[in-house]
Image (cartoon, rainbow, N blue to C red; front, side, top):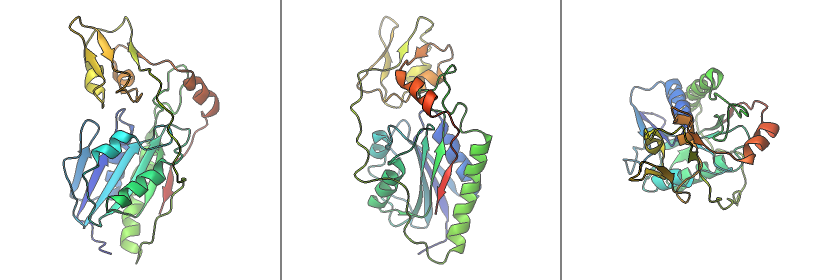
Length: 260
C-alpha cells in the first residue's frame, strides 16, 4: 500500500453548513500542504478521478438514516483509482443508522480504500429555538474532536504497517427510505423576497414568481431546511410533529465516534 499522502481532497455536501465545518476541522488536523476543497452542495464534483497517492475525506449529512441521494449522484463520475479515503457522516443527534456503512460501501464501489471513518453530530434540520435538537452543533468540542480525528488518521496511516479492512456499524440491506410527504418549508408574511432562501437551496426547489411570491417545489425539496436556517427575517418555517418527537426523545448529548 502506498502510504505517502501528497494531497488531501475534502469533498462535502453541506446544505446547512454543519458538514462543511466538520470537513474543515478534519482538514486542519490532517496538516498537509496540498489540501483541495470540493463543495458539492450545489453541483457535481469537478474532478473524475483522484491520484492514487491522495487521501479523500467524504463528509455528508444523514437523512433518515441514509446518505442523501444528491451526495451520491454528484459523486457518480468519481473514480478512486485505489486511493485511500475517510467516510464521515454528520447526524442530528438521533442516529446515523446505516448511513456510514452506505457511504463506506459506495466509496469502495467507486475504487477507494477506506482507512478510517467517523460519525459527528450537527444541529438537526428540524431543530427550533423552542424545541432545540443538538442546537449549535458542531460546537467547539465537536470541532476539536474532528481536528483530533484528522491527526489520528494521519498517525495511523504513517505508523500502521498494513491497514486492514475497515469495519463500521450498519446493516445491509440498508434502512428503507420512507416516501417523502408532499410538504416543504413555507414563507410567512415576514418574507421580504430577499432571495437568500433561493440561493441556499441545494436542489433549486425555491423560486420567485413574477408577482414577487416565494414558492417551493415540494417534489424537489429534500427538507434539509437550509432556507429556514439562513433566512435573515426568520420568515421561512417548517412545522412538523417530528421536531417534538426528536426533542422529547433525543435531547441527550451524543458524542462523536471514530473507527479505524
